[in-house]
Image (cartoon, rainbow, N blue to C red; front, top):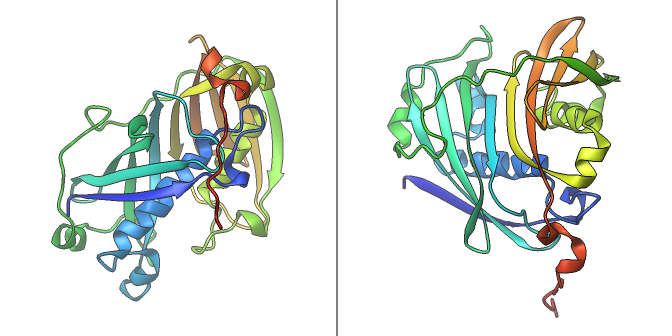
Length: 262
């Protein structure tokens, strides 16, 4: 089985506040859930790795949003596959479908981490269990370079709490993305839609850590960088690229039809 597919319905907590569509960052949560389900088919999910002294860590996400995202209650289909397994690096490529049309595509860089050394472990065990499908939706796998930050737009501080912590006892990457979204320009979130999202996770943080999230304008039109730091040390770097909304993204243009559940 080269590819794995999973269908989800957009739930209330995962819609944006302006157009009732799936929040782009919520798509990442569905992706990670699908990835976990895929690995579970070969007994390589997070709980399967405990006895092997290993755990999963995602290091990068790169996503292109190429069409309108689904509305609340509608179906979203995710298709993902192992596109590269090198000595240490593991790449997953993926497509998100809405009404049988690709709406988002991208890749994610993962590592298996040794619990003792906190360093990447060899991937031999994966090569025995998963086939590689060399289909690269964004082209060659390469490290994303975050654009230079120019003018500070907004800065906030956040102390990690229990709601930020995942089953590995470190801060879930969703929390970092939420911080970036909180500092993104409000006028852009109202009049623009996310076109590209690039995330690089640099360092783990834990319960009680104080984080600073700063959003900067860049010299590239409609492009912002979001830097999350702990005591001046980079924890997560995010780049967002936006496009202006068109008429087809308005709520009034959509006649929501809910299927009877009786």
